[in-house]
Length: 400
View 1: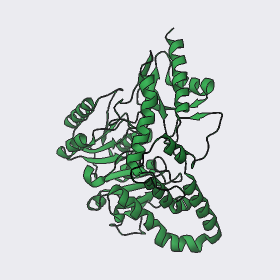
View 2 (view 1 turned 30 degrees about the horizontal axis):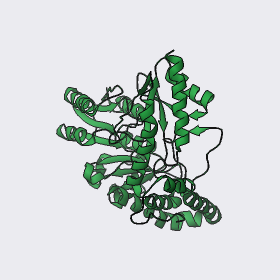
View 3 (view 1 turned 120 degrees about the vertical axis):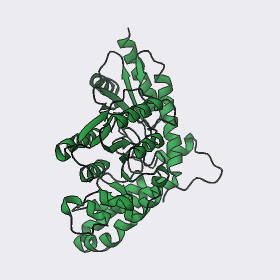
View 4 (view 1 turned 45 degrees about the horizontal axis):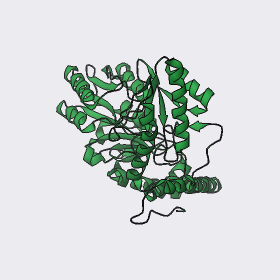
């Protein structure tokens, strides 16, 4: 690793984080990227490992991939991920994205019958909402949304989920986001999952935006099914996801299209990947090493919270600017949703891009759209000053 761990007693100050940022690619001068929620940049050691993996695979071809890679390297990564989330290696399945992970769990959950109810939220990721609605066609169930309007408190979230579970006929399955992708809100998992257990509901946890910036311990959380990716907050190459299934619950997830390559009690039969993302799998351990070198999730969480608060604390004071994410760092994350009165989300996103050179993203929350800005550990205060200046100008124009 080319970046030394922090010495005992040293402080992760701005100078230290500038050293970290120097190990990432320099951003283009023409645009400020505040859409780091899609995927994160690889640090230099990770990119070097990835490039070496691609070169080596391109030289060695099938003898390597059908041999050492399949026998050894896949299991190395499964062990590393298992350690990270406090699971067992045989409970880990590699996929190509968090989306593929969650779609697998939703589509292959076979404990549903006509008349059952499945629950999901308008704040869940759009592709997952689609998959939960699709279960109505595929399995004859009732697919019911839990509607949450931003901003929303923990008490209201718990109350809405409790109401939905009470009113549902034969509730069986719940899709739940650990961190909501639209506004980065950490849901009160303990309370919601306790409610689900009371009603006998299985929970499919979408942790795509959690792993790497929020603590993830499947044992402490009591999670049986979860989907992750490694390319958002862990900095692995794009195209690598993970499914976790508690071994005692594996029977509830069907083999992928009747897969016969593995026995029924082997999680690897839950996805027939075909050609795996070889380079990403080989380089991912370097990303986990770098993540640990920086101080792991606690250090990233602290840095991201500081950067988020740096701009949100000022933007929240602007007339007509509405912050739709929690201001409390214990409930928020790097992802922040916002709106400007008098502008729809598309107009706001385009104004930030075309007039101020700031790239953000629209996110749908069911009946409306919001704009989301997401910082990375490499985001600079100058970039965030630019965002606040842009929102100040737009606020004045729309409230003149």
